[in-house]
Amino acid sequence: MQNKVRIVLVNTSHPGNIGGAARAMKNMGLADLYLVAPRDYPSQEAVSRASGATDLLESAVVVETLEEALADCQLVIGTSARERTIPWPLVDPRESADLVFNEGLETAFVFGREDRGLTNEELQRCHYHVHIPSVASFSSLNLGAAVQVIAYELRMKFLASQDAPAVQNKWDVPAATVEQVDYLLAHLEKVLVDIEFLDPDMPMQVMPRFRRLFQRSRLDQQEYGMLRGMLTSMEKQARS
Ligand code: SAH
Image 1 (cartoon, helix red, strand yellow):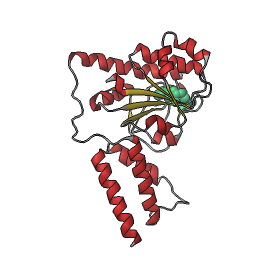
Image 2 (cartoon, rainbow, N blue to C red):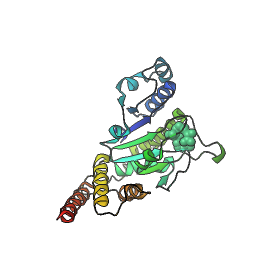
Image 3 (cartoon, rainbow, N blue to C red):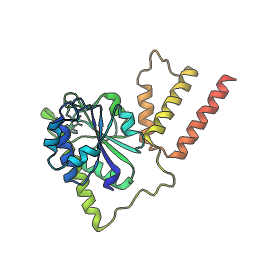
Image 4 (cartoon, rainbow, N blue to C red):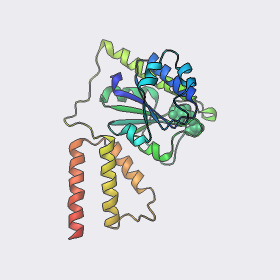
């Protein structure tokens, strides 16, 4: 289970936090670390804060965009210290570990910047949001501490499963990947503009709401293929 989970840190400014996150991960048996455009990395500070977890830093995958870090994932869980514009499926850390375990999918946990967290657009890329239930008046944890809490819940779930393996996802078709859902949304947007359902100059929240709908439905690869095929047929009809 645990080798299906990656931790993605977005635009981290303090390299010490990257080291702290690596240490927290290794303590709890996680190994896959993705760094999206870290601001000051590689760094000696990261190595010292990682203590003995420098192997995780060495194998960390550094990418420029969040899309690259998520492309082959099937389940994306974004962490957030506070509520955002439109409500999104929200779980607590324990429930997020249940999701990982019950679904058995390639999963990413996404963590934001120290100063301003994840953007709304980044959060909208996530199937679920997870909030660590801190007090509302002082809700933001240190980045490494937030990684520790999530990694700990995953570890507890993993240990509990050693006695009695939990039921794994028995769906007949593999789940769609993040990249496929992105293609579908781009295709849908194009068709909606073509048929004048969507005004590109006044898009409102239409596409984020479609994104939320598709992500909530947990699309499989066959359903993805059907929807892409349907859009292609609609395009042909609209043109004729
Ligand atoms: N000031 C930022 C908080 C950034 S804290 C904001 O208001 O969003 C840095 C990162 O640590 C966050 O992006 C998130 O990934 C994680 N984090 C901190 N506190 C958290 C909490 N209570 N629940 C979930 N994640 C949290």
